[in-house]
Amino acid sequence: MSTIDVRAAVFVAPNQPLEFRDLSIPAEPGANEVLVRLAASGVCHSDLHALDGEWDTPVPIVLGHEGAGEVVAIGSEVSELEIGDHVILSWTPSCQKCEFCVSGRPVLCQLANETAYQHVFFDGKPRLSDGDESVKSFLAVGSFGDHAMVPASAAIRIRKDAPLAQAALVGCAVTTGIGAVTNTAQVEPGSTVLVVGCGGVGLNVVQGARLAGAKQIIVADVSEEKLELGRRFGATHTVNSREVDLIETVRELTGGRGVDYAFEAIGLPFTIEACYEAIRRGGTAVVVGQVADGVKISIDPFVMSDQEKRLIGSNYGSSRQSIDFPKIIDLYMEGKVDLDSMVTDRIPLDGVNDAFARMRAGQGIRTVIEY
Image 1: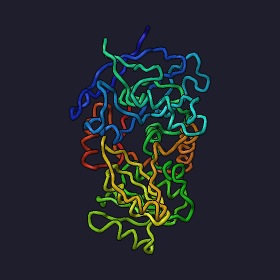
Image 2: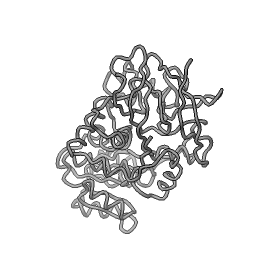
Image 3: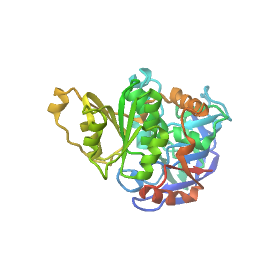
Image 4: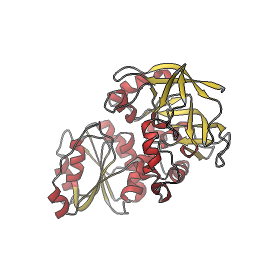
C-alpha cells in the first residue's frame, strides 16, 4: 500500500511539548473516506485539556480538530465530494444511519461516540503511523498535521472564495458558540443573555445572541481586554467579575429578574453554578465550556423544580454540520459574522507549543496554524 508523508505535531505525554515527526498515511482513502491537504488549523482549548493531562488521552496522537483544507483523494464510494473541493473538518462524523443522525442530531451519532470520540475511525483503527507504530488522530481529525484522512461525512464542502484560515475556526469554536444560541437554546428575539467567558467560544456565543436578536447581551470575564472584545463582537454590557459581584450586577441590569438565558463558555464548576443562579424563573442556563475529567457541580434541585429553571448541555452547538458550516461561511462572506477578528496569531506548525503557552496566559483569541 502506497503512503504519503505527513508532517505533524504529536502528543506523547501529558505536560510535555508536542513532538514534530514525519508520519505516514495511506495515499488511497478507504471506501467512505477522503484525504485532505490541510491549509489551516485552529489551536483550541480542548487540545490544551489533553496536553495538560486534564483529559485521559491515548498516546501517541496527533492533536488538533479545527481544520480546513482541500480534498486531494476520495474513496471509491464517496459521491458527495470531489477532488479539489474546499472543506471544513468536523470532529463528529455522522454515520447517517443511527437514530440520532436520522432525527437531525448528528452531534450525538452513536457510531461517532464509539469511534471518533476514541480517536479512531469507523472500523476502530487509526490511519497514521510512525514506522511500525500506530498513531491516533484526535477525534478522528488530527489537524496538527499537514494532511488528514477523515470519514467523508466529516469533510463539509464550502464555497471556494472563503479564506481557509478563517474557515477552519468554523470547525469548532464558531459553530460551538453560535450553535449553542441558535440551535441548542433557540434564543428568541428580544431576550436577555449572559455570556460567561470571552474566549473563542464565548465570543461566538455573543455573535449568536446578536444574530438571534437578543436585546441585552451581558458578557462577564476577569480580563478587561477580553471584555472589550466582547463589546466588539456585540455585547451591550460588560462585567468584570473580579471586581464586582456577578449575580448582583446581572440582577441590577435586568431589573431584578435575572437573564432569560445564560451561557457558560469556560468549563469551570463555579462559573456553571453562577450561570444557573443568574437566570430568571423559567430561564435556561447552557453549559458550553468543556470541563476537566471528574469535575462536578452543585445546584439546588428544589429551586430547579420550584422555579422551573433549566440547566442543559450543548455539544458542538447542537449543529448539523453539513447545513451549519456553509451557512456560517455565507454569513461571514456577507459581513454578518466576524471571523477575521478571531484570528489573532498566524503561525507555522513548529510554533504550536508557543501558541499553547499564550493560551495558558490568556493571550489572544485564536491562533491559526497555516500550512
